[in-house]
Length: 285
Image (cartoon, rainbow, N blue to C red; front, side, top):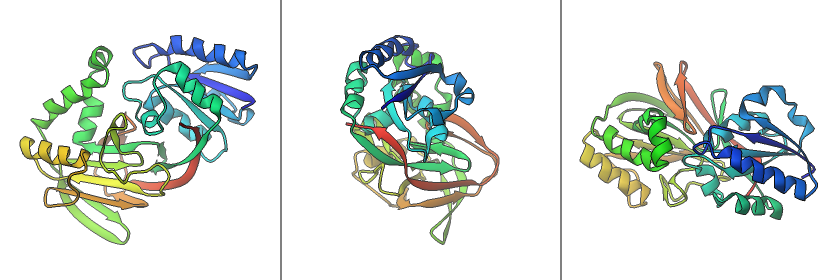
């Protein structure tokens, strides 16, 4: 770690990222490391070849914006969690306390993880369609600022009362399925809350596989029972839900709105999802 680029998202963490940035810069000065500090809005102005390490001060959306610049470059990513969910940090056992996150970076333990590539976009976590997308994309920012991650649980109850089904045509491993579903999640990291609840106990960041979870039911009670069964690893595939792993997947598209790592995205073409193995180096616990 000789030349560090510090990328700060001033709107992350209920705008606490500015305070976190001061702690990070003090850390770099203390270890006598060369660095440059920028805002997340200045990414296009930077030559990333000038750096061997990038610090991301923000949440999962911040990391999602940085990934395209460092994927398959050898640049090491250091996460200073400061977002609503911080799911990638949780998956890597990186604490939300800034000083402890910096200790992990100082220990210099590096893990190389997979990414999803969704058409021309990278994803460290997941793409969600249907119910999962509604929760992420339609939860008001004011609610997230007030209640943090709990705002998603509140929105989840509301949207479960008005579930909508849609027909999806999905291609994977020379198979084609046509399915009526209320929710599709394709995950590299399947944890839904910290590192406690996940769509699959088999979901790993470095197994060169994506985990696909499709929920079919529209009845809110059955939906919640099935969803709880999945995140507690009580059930897998059955008549109400489908779960499988693959390394490539295509969802035929008639204009869908979903989310990629918590950021709203409108898909105008078929959604082609591939695993990009061992594409990001990252400091982890």
